[in-house]
Image (cartoon, rainbow, N blue to C red; front, side, top):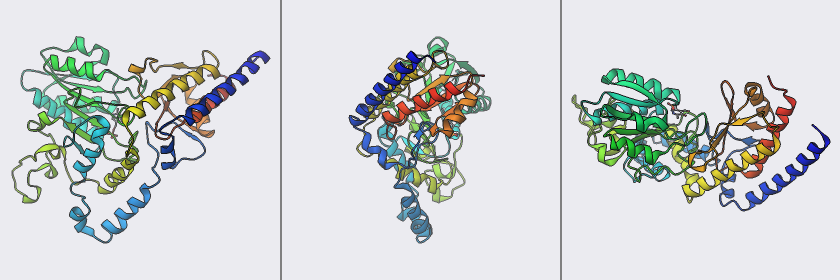
Length: 411
Ligand SMILES: Cc1ncc(COP(=O)(O)O)c(C=O)c1O
C-alpha cells in the first residue's frame, strides 16, 4: 500500500469512526443493547442464533425449579403451560403484522413447512397439481416441499422468486417462498408476489425465518395465506427454540393438518378415537409442546416491549448502509463483492460479501472477535440485529475485515 493510500485510509477511518459514534448517540434503540449478554467482540451472527437476553436465565430457572420442581403436573394449568403455544404466538403476532389468534408456536420450521404446504395444497383443492418453490430456497423448505408434493400427488416447479408471476397458472396450487434469501440477504416482494399468487387462484406460503424481528412483514395487511418462521434468529428465542405457524383466520376452518396430533384435537382430554380438529390457531399444534424451550422464548420476547418494528427496520437499513460504506472505504477494491441488493426495498438485515478466500477469512475474523458466518463456498455473511448491534460495531467489523484481507493474500 502506498504512503498516500495509508494517509487517506487513516483519515477515512477517523471520519467513519466519528460518524459511527454520532449514529450511536442518535440511535433510539441504543438502550436495548444492555439487555443482552454480549462480550467485547462484534456479534454479526444474530441472523443465525440471536444473543441471549440477560433476564432469561432467571426465568428459565423458575420454570425448572418452581414450575416443574414444585408444581409439577399442576403447571400445565397453573403456570399456563398448556396454552403457551397460542399465548406466545400472540406475542409474536404484532412483530409480523398479524392480529391475535392466527399464530401457534410449535415444532421446528421444517415441520411447519410440511404442515403448511400440505394444508395449502388441500385448501387449493382438486385440479391444481403444481407446487412452485423458490429455487433459491433454504434447503429444508425444498426438501420438505418435495416430500409433501409426493404425498399429495403434486409436482414441484422450482422458480426464482422474481419469475413466479410468469410461472403461475391454472395448475398452480401452492407457492412457497422465502421472504428474505438466507444467502444473499435479498428481500422479496411479499405484497406483490402474494397478490400475483392470489390472482392465479393459488395459495401463498411464506418462510419468514430471515425477516421476522428485522423488518415489517404485514401478514394480515398483504393477505398472506400461511407462513412459517423460526424464533432463534432475530427473535432471540435460544438454540432450537420452537418455530411458529401462521394460518390466516379465513383459512382456519379449512386448515386440514397432515399431522393431526392430539394437541390439535377439539377435546384433547376426551381421548376419543376419532379426530376432530380444534378451532383457531390450536389446529396447527401436533404433540406435547417443548415447554422449557417455549417458555425460554416467551421470556426472550420481553426485549420487544415498547419497540416498534418500523424503528427496527430504520436502524437495520442504516446499519447495513453504513457497513457497505465502511467496506467500500476500507477494503481494497476487488477483494469482496456484495451480493446483497443496494436498494432498500430489496434488502433484508444482512450483508453477504462474495470473497474468493472466504473460507479462510471467516475463521480469522472470528479469532479477532468479529463473528459472522460462512456460506460455502465463497460467501461471508454478516447479520445486523438492530436491538444489539451498534454503528461502532459495524465500523470495527469492516476495519477488521480489511485488516484480515490485507494479511490474507487471497487463495
Ligand atoms: C429460511 C429458513 N428456513 C428454514 C430453516 C430451518 O429451520 P428449522 O431448523 O427450524 O427446521 C432455516 C434455518 O436457518 C432458514 O433460514
